Length: 321
Length: 267
Image (tube, rainbow over all chains, first blue to last red; front, top):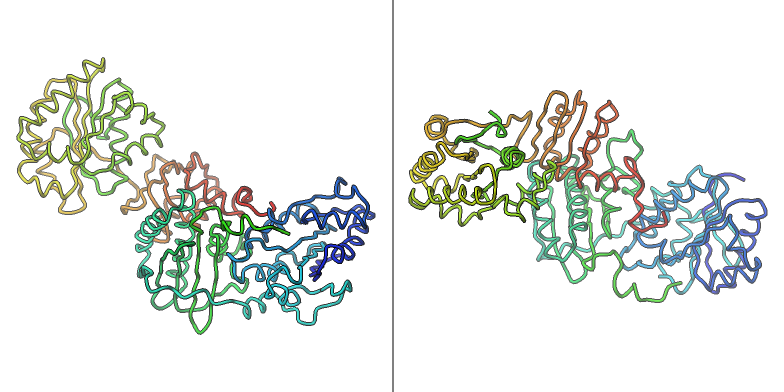
């Protein structure tokens, strides 16, 4: 059986989860295929009970803590593509989709789940995303059927009737970013020369918001790319709004026109593709990025967290798994 | 002549970009250090930090020079006071710099001053008096003096410059619009400053046929510029030095460089 199998597993208890995962692990190891287990201790223990102790120490098995892997939607997606590519055909990846910093990325995690179908299309891999029915936000659990072609429900695998291909999912599921607050500073982009001034405005604001030099440079680069896109490909008045609140320094680039990449810059453009690197890069560089396109307008909002390391202080100390 | 050829005389240069001024100053002081001369920058344009950066990019130990007192930066306020003071003060300042250089065991002294358009306007005829006093003081001494005038607004006339200085220094560029400066020596190209959407055609044409590309002084580049660099490398150019900005972008752009490993994610 080749091709991508991208499945969601909706569960309530570690044992219910292990009942589904154990046969997958056993089958993979019996066939000498690699297993990547992105699970926490209680889930690993539940699997021990069913697969037999010591399975996680097998040389074909790699275990990673979810808190480490699910840090940032675009980086996690890129990491999955890399890991699965490196492990070769037939890999089984089991991920406890705890989306630890979900509060920082409204909408982006479920978008990343949808894009995974495109990112791994054609690869021979089994990816099972485990969603705890009550501990995860209801929005994530509810969207699992639309972002995964197959679902385990009450332990039984079935095709998902609601599944949407990634481009259609992202067209429908693009939460509108928060409005630009009245106190935002607005810069108009008229000519390419305005990008020079914009870099200085963004750098000063980033420093004033307490970002370190590296994050300031990342933000300047990211906003510069978004503004370059607006000048080069957008229509009508192009504006950049910049503001700071308690948690974020945020920047929204807006213009008239359409956003041509249906996958919203989640995937690295192929080498021959002349456009699309800017949003892809900005998504990786920033702590949060939302693209909203409709009614002839495009808004791209990039955010950097003022605490600086991309993990909110409250979530950092929260229990995981 | 080029700035590193100016020796034992009083010369001038008219610069049209910050990068050009830095390049001229770095050449001027770099040549002096090689001859064990002491150096003073009258930092009228408030870009002493920029000069030190450029010197480091040119492989000079700029911080050490400043720490050991071989290179003295006179801040913008003191520079302005000096230029606006009576000619006697100019003589005293130059004589003092020479005496300190001799006492420190140096073979001579190089003095450079940057004169932004605003200072030139405020100084008026006092600037010419300052220049004459400096010229008279350094005659016959182991001293080299270079005055850099900002030529972007109300450029000083060539006649006025040659009347007050004995040599004219320049640093030709292939391209310089005040943001990006491209200089070339044969097929070896050096990029300085910042490059973005404004420079797509200029950058492509500067890189066409390049053998070596030095980006040590390239302080910002966008993804489009990185693509132009990548194409130049694919066409046979050698990237001799990468600035921090180039490294950052190569690191952040998986299609071009190594995958981004240190930023989290499972990779």
